[in-house]
Structures are given as structure tokens and as C-alpha cells.
Image (cartoon, rainbow, N blue to C red; front, side, top):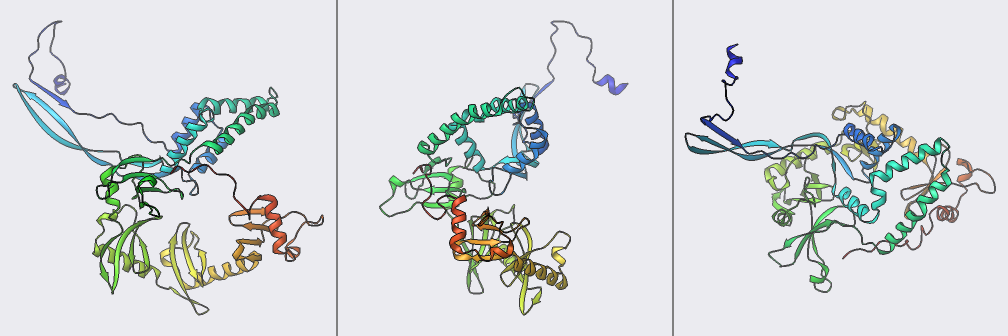
Length: 434
């Protein structure tokens, strides 16, 4: 009861003046909306009337595909932020500065630079299609078609004709989207310093616009560090990137340096590149840390044994752990502990891969980037990254046996039937800005 009484106000009257004993004012910041998780994104799609239960998972998977790279799922550490506290007592104001952690997230969805540039481009040129109401309306029309209330041919015609015209107009007149932001001037050269997406879809910092360069001169480029974005990069951060690659010293008579590449920050020793672990700042890596990473790489790359006189090594790549033998890469399945792979297990995996590869190719023209391969439903053509179905020949379905009789010219003709101009000029492209 005493505890409860402490929080009770004494009897008060309307208009009664109260003596001020003390007052505290604490600085607070507006919190941004929470980043989506897969579950909260599905909930939002449901609220907007976009999609159906059967399409939510494929839609989210599609925007997170490595090849597209529009969205990533990440956990991010928070940043320490100062805030002020003012205290008034006995007519005196005191000021304190305290700190708090802000921005920490776990397993949330973040748009990438590529994702933001693509959205900006689509909002500029396909505003109607990007409208939430349009997508929800299409879903409603699909339901009406299923119920027999609307004819699908008319519905598609109403959509496709104006959409196709917009696509053609965009291809003809739109500039290539780069998300370009001018950050300022390079103090050394006085030229424009900007950040944008490269032709390869990677964010880069650039010194020098075309009109500022001498004839035959090229701009200077630098890659962004992990965690940096073209939306938020500042001038001083951009200038720091041109300090890379940075020489740290020598080891075993060869130069040791750090830098940023297409696949992230790295240590370079001679002709060997070693990835710097995620979360480490490349600018903080000194010679001692670089040598530690070099030794770890050597230990990891040391052969675990041999097979038919050739060394077997193991590593971790973009698609997971693997064995390498005689220029052949063999995926290590999850049931096998990567750190404890035995020589017997390695031999079994290599033998299975060799047998599979031997049965895979019917024809292989490596210089042309063309192969005829055995597939689950029969032979097919592989052209660069495309799989192309083999049509009937003389009215007969092509089998693994008859596919051996196909010539390169025949296969090329089949490719061109599916991919016009596969071996000629490329079709029209959007103009490149600068």
C-alpha cells in the first residue's frame, strides 16, 4: 500500500499553482517504420490485395534471387547515437549527453542499390503498372475470369496494347537508369565526383564526367564497401575509397595489399586474392591481420589427399562448399561435415561427379559456348546460359542416340529459331546516359 501511495497525487484544486521541484527533458528521435520480414511483407501484400497465397513465396524468392539482387535479407548492427538530457532544479539547468543504440535489426529485408534504381526507373516510365491499385485490380479481374464474369481475351487486350506501346517508347527514348548522384568535386583534380550503378550492375564511385576528360582519357572508378549505398554515400567516404588498393607491406618477397573488387574486400598477396570476412572493415586491416588471413587461406587450400595422382583441395564458393580435383568442382552435400571431409568421402564424391559428367555431354563445342546435353526429359541444347529444346528432326523425336548425329550447323540453326540474332547483331538497347 505504501508503494501504491507513493505514486498518488495529493488532493488538488482547479487552477491551483504547484511548486516546481524539478523538470527533465529528454531528446528523442522519430523511429523509421520497421523493415519487413518475409512474414510481415506477406501480411502487407494481403492488406493491399496483391497476390494470392500460392504466389507470395515465389514473388519474394524472385526479388531475392542472386541474379536479380533487388532485395537482401540481413542482420545489421546498430549505431551508437548521442542524445541530450536537460534537467531543471532550483532554478538551475544542467545538461547531460548520453548514448543509445539505434538501427539494430535481425533477419530483415533491405533493398539493394540495384533494387532502388530499378524501382525509380519503373516509377518514372511505368507508373500505372507500379500502382498498388492496378495490381490489386488485375487480381480482381482474374477472379472474375475464373467465375465467368469476364472474357480473358478482352482483358489481356485492354492491358497488353497500351503496355506494349509504353515498352516500345521506353526502349526508344529512355536513358539507362544509373541512380547517379553528384557528391561534389575531387579536391585533387577539381573534377566531378559522383556515385552510380555500373554497366555490370555494381555501385561505383567515379571521378570525372565525359565532358571533363581529355581525349582518350578514362574516368577513375572505385567500388563501394559492403554496407555502403549510392543513396547515402557522402563525399568524404567516397574520397576514402580511392585510397584502395592500399599496400600494407611485403611477405615472402611479394607485396601485400588490400582492395575492393566485384565480390567485396580482399587481401592480395602476389597473384593470390583472399576474401576479407564479412563485417570486417577493409580500411582497418593491417599487415598482421592480412598475414593471418593469408595463412588461414593456405591452410584451407592445402590438399586433403590425392585421387589418381592429382591433388584434392576444398573451398567455399558462391554456391557453398566444394572439392576441386583436376579442374573439376564437386559440391559437398550438407550431410558431410566440410571441416572433417575424409579422403574416402572425397573419392566417392569425385567418382560420382566424374560418372555424371561423362554421361552429361553428347556434344560440346566450348569455343562456341554450345553443348548438347542429356537431361531428365531427353537431350537439350545449352547455349551460354539458356536451355533450348531440340525440335523433332524429320518428324522424329531426337533421342540421346540420334543426337550424336547432329552437326554444329544444325544445332546453331535450332538456337537461332529460338533466339533470333543469337550469332548476329544485338537488338536495340536503351541509351546510356554519359
